[in-house]
Every structure is written in C-alpha cells, then in structure tokens.
Length: 310
Image (cartoon, rainbow, N blue to C red):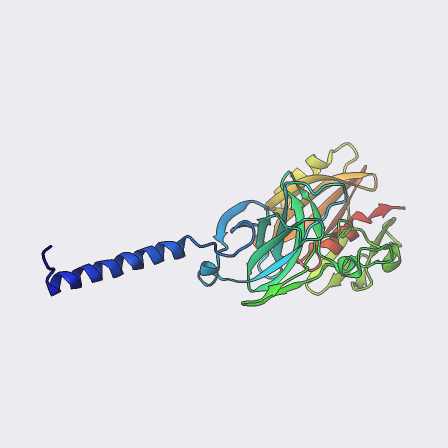
C-alpha cells in the first residue's frame, strides 16, 4: 500500500470537517421549531378577509414583529367543539386581526386549545367559526368569574402582549358577551321622540338623545319621510344630497322595526368610519348613529339593539 503525502492527509481531513458541518447544518434545519400547532398566523383586515400570512416560527419573531404569545382552551355550547373553530386577537390600537387554527392536546380543558404569536400590544381575544364568522365567543370578565350564573359582567378583557412573554389561560368561552344585564343599564325614555333606549352607566348623558364615552358617541335622530316612499328610496335621495361614502351595508331588524345598518367614511375619511342604523316607521326614520372604537363596540351594539318605540 502506498503512503499518502502530508498534503493529501490535510486535504482529506478538511473535506471530512466540511462534510460533517454540512450534516450538522442539515440536522439543525430539520429540527422541530417548538411551536405548538399551526405556524402560520392569518392576519385579517377589519372586514375579516385574510390579507397576509405571518410565519410564527421563533426564528422569525423579530423579523415579523411578533414578540409574544397567548394561549388558552376552547369551548362551545354544544357536545363537541366544531372543527372549524379558530381563535382571533383584535389589536385595540390598529384593529388588525390575527387568527390561528385550533390544536388538540389533553392539557386543554376540553382537549382543544390554541397558541397564537402576536406583535407586542393590547388585544381582545375571541373564538369564531370559519363557516359562521358572525358567531363569536370572547375572553371576558365572566370567564374569569367562572362562567357561573352569578357572573353578571360580560365586559371584554384587554390582554396585554409583551415581548418575549407568554400569557396563558386566555380562554374565549363567553358566548353571551353581547348580552346586557338589565340591572346594569339606564333605561331612558325620550320626552319628545316616543322611544326608549338603554345604556350602561359608564356612558355620559349629554342631551335628548346623545351619549358619549371617551371618543365614542351615539345619537338618535328623528327624520321625516313620505309615507309611500321605501327606506331604500329615501336613503338614495339622502345619499345624493350628502355625498355619502358607504363602506358597508346590511339589513337589520330591531324590536320589530326593519332597517339598514351602514358603515360610512367620517368626513370622507375611510380610516375613521362611523356607523348609522336607519329604522323605518311609516312617515319617520329613526337614525341611530355615531362613532365607536374597539373598546366600546360591543356596548354600542347593545345600546342600538335596545332601541324600541313606546
């Protein structure tokens, strides 16, 4: 057998070191990233449409601005948790919504839960169904109370996400989050408008009828309409006169009154939307309108739904 020169031995050793390093790199790249469940967080806009995906793996947390996680269990008011139940977090400052799929693990209360990586900030957390996005269950004071009959407060809890921290037991169980407790509301009967409306005592009464809370406002107007005109005809004529930019519109029924609910650009600014509910009552239209932020949206919905004629 011929002897190898010193130079040949050096080349062989270097080649082995390089090959070994490549194997180590490949092995490291194939390791589990340690994130439970789906690593892709769907980011939705205010209309609920997915507009981007954020990689949730730890190596990308800094690059994507995702700095903390929340985790919790899921429930549903039935025998089984629907397979299409997802969990979303609504940023209270930006209104950007981040969603993730459910995961199965016996550590969760009913065997289903979630883990969601989020940018640093404050959030309202809720569960919803992909097949029925209007349905929501929130993380509220009732959840913290234990979801017992005596748990009267359904106030949404603001969850703070901090860099490098994980917040646990954020369980979006409250499917009655939008139900007001009558004893907690002030019933107001308009002396001139022949209607009644109920609002929480945390709102400030300004005049008949206008209430405010922080930057949020809600007012009721009584407008004239020809008896033979439909509400759609009346709105069409009104839109032409006011040059209204309608962002969304849906039909509603509130305590026997049919109407239309709209989101419109405030003073032409689509980034600062206002809401208006128009209820048809023969020769009158009752307009319930104002501006609501993410903190007061659920209360505004409660107040609007309480409207009724006397």
